[in-house]
Image (cartoon, rainbow, N blue to C red; front, side, top):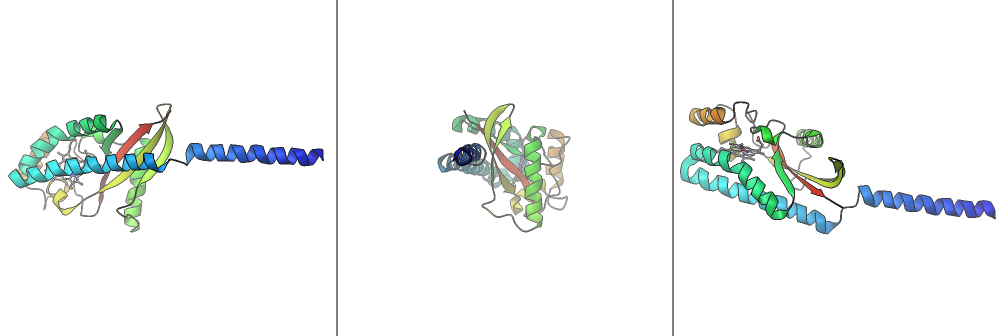
Length: 196
Ligand code: HEC
């Protein structure tokens, strides 16, 4: 009788521990996921809008000057608006501020591997609960894929005009964001949302 009671109690304790552990590390509710996804989408749309408008009105030379001055500003303002920690990161960054942390580096390498294996889709995304500077946070990343228009400024020398290359080198002496091909993972959008 006693051993049966102990067995039942043990079972209950283990079950409770298992499920509380689960909800802590795996369960992020859909409302929060959608809030993060739509922030990422809205940000990319806004940034692309600025890029396309400037490419149309003055080609890559004008777009580069605008991009270089506004990309960080626009990112900062957008992050404040949606109250999320949001930025773009890349393994081969143009702006040193876009260099990834350890977690981001690992995921970016995973995205590259998925691309190589033909597993990358428009739905590809990562959600994870992690400690960031000692605080619990939801981390989200989504790949940013290179399109043909991007090659004007991120492609090889056949695609980047000499005057554009010159401007980029002046503004970003340590630029690594070159020689990309269409379909490559250019980087990712990375969002951190601190919880409780
Ligand atoms: C007119 C030139 C130009 C075009 C076209 C362009 N970019 Fe960029 N890109 C830049 C510049 C300049 C930066 C650095 C911005 C900064 O200082 O924050 C940059 C930065 C980035 C970054 C942030 C990581 C890093 O390297 O610093 C990503 C991601 C990115 N571009 C993706 C793209 C994609 C995807 C496209 C096509 C849809 C594209 N870019 C088209 C000029 C361009």
